Length: 341
Image (cartoon, rainbow, N blue to C red; front, side, top):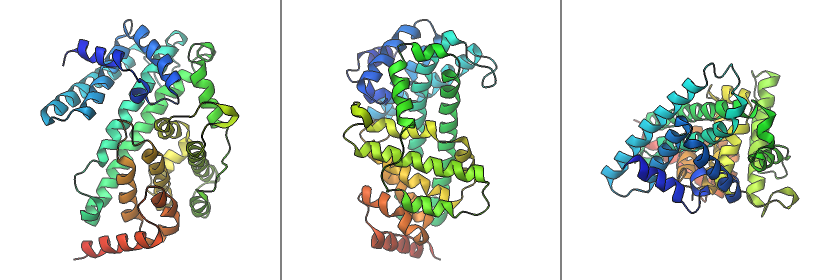
């Protein structure tokens, strides 16, 4: 497909939020207008526009050859976009982004992040179900996902955080509604108790510094806030309802750096945090970038964590319709028996 056709696909989408995965359709409309305006001037933004358009079409394609062609184009275009972006912003991340570039860079970060999330979640697309994998395969599948997810989160956060800190001008620009909404979400406090079992498990962890432990507890609080928002008909203060596809992205952008570093160690209690992230993915399953990733992730986590985490996994499994305590026990026991020599 030609670049012109990919551009047309992006520009003619009636529901842009189905592609960009922002908090509201109104925010997506603002972002789309800015993307179309700035992309004609900035090659890195145009390449990422074309890349996410190709990636979107790869997820919708029914023919294998067509899907592979779109996927290859998406990879090439995204690689070019990142290369051009870094050439246009030398010194990142230690040097701040030029304030004049803050709006197009935020547009770039948004499209890059959604594109990277889609690529990350496809790491869960192994045709074999977790029940059919041996223990080694399940462990490798989970490790591959966690590595890719951490890479995705760091990439998206790096660009996003630098543009938000580049200048106060962006907070008075057309992007103001998006930024205000995100700030209001970050200022919410947990209201529900869905993560209580997870919080209790993490609070007893030994060997973490007070700072890292606080970061991990904050990450779980963020999940509870996201679950609360998803449970509400609208956010606090009568704001418009927040699109479910935005919540996994918001959480990845707002968790403390200390949690990401701790998660990379593979501590089971921290890996269990991702079971609650799977709830956010499941609620966003209508999104082209997410699909059935939440269920696949939770199945792999259940097999990996085992019986000791039955109570922690109870809420996510119930939310996803995978069964409660007895179902967890029976599933893990069955996988263990099949993995035994």
